[in-house]
Length: 294
Image: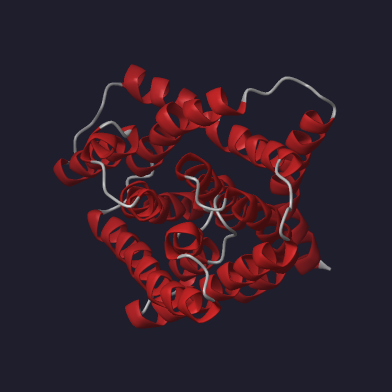
């Protein structure tokens, strides 16, 4: 019973926040997804990354370790994703980003927080920071067919990560007013992320069931397998191992759908993949948590 209570305590806040967003959308309440997504991407998430890395005083070694794990998982996802898509005959530019980049933000970070506390959030942020940098460079390049240096330069996340790493490396102390301001912006990010996820689930449809289901299953199964392999290769254990496996096992990221919509890469299938993989993710996550929790 204690294990069930612990799992419920982890899953309930994440699930209920997403359900609130879902109900909010179905009731026809106003929710400007474009504005809120832009706010989360350009203000909230960079502040969350910077605040968590600096406030929890992660060592450079820890950041490098989790960053390496993120890079290795992306490499593994890329290799397996290409093989899978070649076998199935699906388009690489359409679906490879969805297989390579899990939803480490909207869903992964809250799970890491509620499963392992502030330490888990810090490690999850380190993993997420490198993952999102790769997503906004390699992921966009795959979907668009080329790489945009201008887009990378205009991405606030890049500067948040670089500045946080610089402060950690030089052991710089920031003024309290600045820390408090960044922390205030960071605090809104996870709840709004989860509400935005719920709104996305309410508004996205499943136009092509089998194609969407195959991508969804591939993402979850590939994610868990590569996550476990990465942990073994790097010799990670404890909370770090749990964070890597959880983050790697997350469903298709909403940004994969947004990239597909922007570059006309099968957005209907990607929309269904976001919905189905998220539902599958909620179903299998308790079992993954049972494996990784101490």
